Amino acid sequence: MDELMKTVLTACIPALTVVFGWALNKAVSIANGYISNKFAQSCLQNAANAVFNAVQYVNQTYVDALKEADKFDEDAQRVAYNRALAAAKKALTQETVTFIKETFGDLDSYLKPMIEAQVRSQKVYM
Image 1 (cartoon, rainbow, N blue to C red):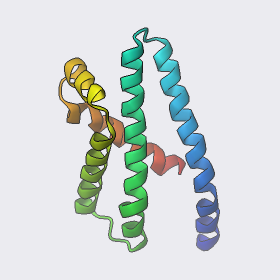
Image 2 (image 1 turned 120 degrees about the vertical axis):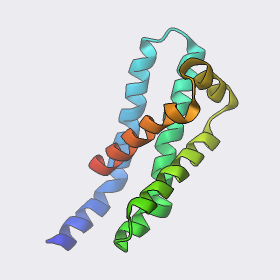
Image 3 (image 1 turned 90 degrees about the vertical axis):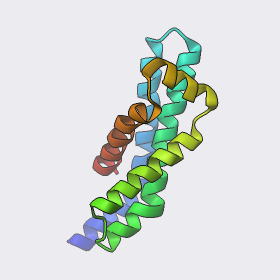
Image 4 (image 1 turned 180 degrees about the horizontal axis):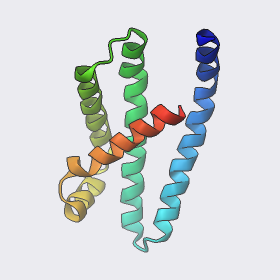
C-alpha cells in the first residue's frame, strides 16, 4: 500500500504544483486589487514568485533526496531554509528589495514567514 501511495503522489505532484502556482498567483491578484499602487503590486508579486520558486527549487534539489534517505533532520531543515532564503533574495529585483526594506523594514524578516508558509503549503498540497 505504501508503494501505491508513493506512486500516486509522484504522479499527482506536477499537476498539484501547477494548481498551487495558479492559486498563489490568483491570491496575489486578489490582494493586488486592494492595492492601488501598481509599483507596490509589482513588488509584492515579485516577492511571492521568488519565494514560491525558491522553495520549490530547494525541495527538488536538496530536501527530496534527504527525505528519501531519511536524513532530513533539524540541521538539514536549517540548511534548506537558508538555501531558500538565498535563492529568493537572488530572484528579487533591486526595486523589490528597496520597497520591502522601506515598507516593512528588514528583508529577511519579511521573507521568513513567506518561506515558512510556502514550505507548509507545498508539504501539505504537494
